[in-house]
Amino acid sequence: MKFEDIPTPAVHRLSFYLRQLEALKSTDRRTISSKQLGESLGYTDAQVRKDLAYFGQFGHPGIGYRVDELISQLRKILGTDKIWSVVLVGAGNLGRALMAYRGFLRKGFQLVAVFDADNSKVGQSFGDLNVLPMSDLQKTVLAQRVRLAVLAVPVESAQAVADQLVAAGVRGILNFAPISVAVPSGTAVQSVDLAVQLEQLSYQMNLDATEPVSPPPADAASAG
Amino acid sequence: MKFEDIPTPAVHRLSFYLRQLEALKSTDRRTISSKQLGESLGYTDAQVRKDLAYFGQFGHPGIGYRVDELISQLRKILGTDKIWSVVLVGAGNLGRALMAYRGFLRKGFQLVAVFDADNSKVGQSFGDLNVLPMSDLQKTVLAQRVRLAVLAVPVESAQAVADQLVAAGVRGILNFAPISVAVPSGTAVQSVDLAVQLEQLSYQMNLDATEPVSPPPADAASAG
DNA sequence: GGATGTGAATGCATTCACAGCA
DNA sequence: TGCTGTGAATGCATTCACATCC
Image (cartoon, rainbow over all chains, first blue to last red; front, top):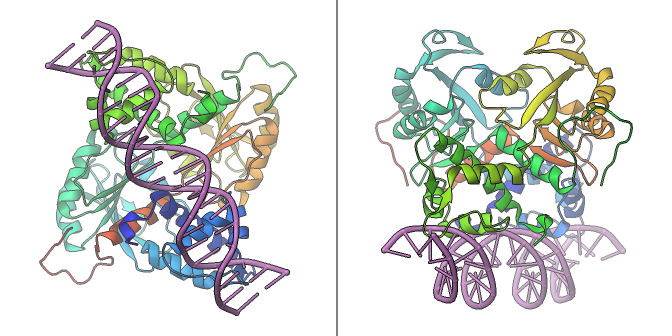
């Protein structure tokens, strides 16, 4: 089976397996069964086994999966056994918060440059780095062969910046602007839109007939 | 067909249709076909029609969908035709950035309280609001009948805070901590984990045999 | 002609269930 | 006995293709 036709949802779950396993490292647990791993994440045991089996035989019948072993296999599969250089475009509140958020940089990613279109921000320090002007983007990305970018700019400029990134050689974009960024095939985009996610929650509440807007407080509380 | 068994991916796409349509409002466009709407988001026309048809007949044969009409239908379906009260837990960098990010609060959501466990943060101003201590969470959420929460706390406390939120009556949580938050059935969780998303990009790059880590710059650049 | 809405057909992902190994 | 890996069976989502309406 070729890598290309492994189900996308399966690849996505791999990241959660890895996260869960890494949390386990601080405990004294050495092995884990597909059942245990699945239950902690809300999946079935068959699902876990099938997902992992797409990539090889990592388990030990009668034993389960060895935690260390599976972690390193998953890192290899996901490509985070090597370090990826990442640039950030947009040094505003969100950009800063994202980079500062603890655990953002789980091993495997290193921020190598930060850009902003606002000249008043250029030159400001940003962790170990200084904010660079957009005019430096092309040459920096090219020179350092950067392949990944985080896009935290206002929605109006998101598409234009994405175009520049792709032109400079970036092949994966993590986009925080609320727009569907168009990129040529061969380039991947992952998007995070808070409004979209809240809407999904709102929809799910409607299913339970949970009432929105706070009416004047009474005393009862109901749930499905 | 009952609301409960509409495909999750379809509901998710609804949010993107809505986002796209809202962007269209600033133009003079009055109607749009399933083909046009789909193309702008990378879906087929049949997909768009099927998704919308799960909820009713919103289109006009020979014409397409009227933008205004479809927007209000989608808001109704997603539950954002009413205002949902939202609380934020965690007034750190991320929490502040999330709330400040323009467009975060697309109509339909209103932040009514902010909590933080760090006493030095309590009392600080946060937009129109003041940061409250965690000890106020229960009574505030209960009194205002809040059903949605944004969780931007360190991973160690995420599960405990989620438990408190659920106990207070929250039924939907948007979680930014890198952990799989367990909640009782009847409560929904949406999660955002930056490391997970970068890993997904990393995996997709591997498919194209794009090399990670910057070796000393040469002159060639390749792409699939 | 130009578009929707929708049953039928296809294709994809998950689950079952069991052979096989430690 | 306990657990994996995996073909076969099921179930879900997408796409096709066409009757229908403006």
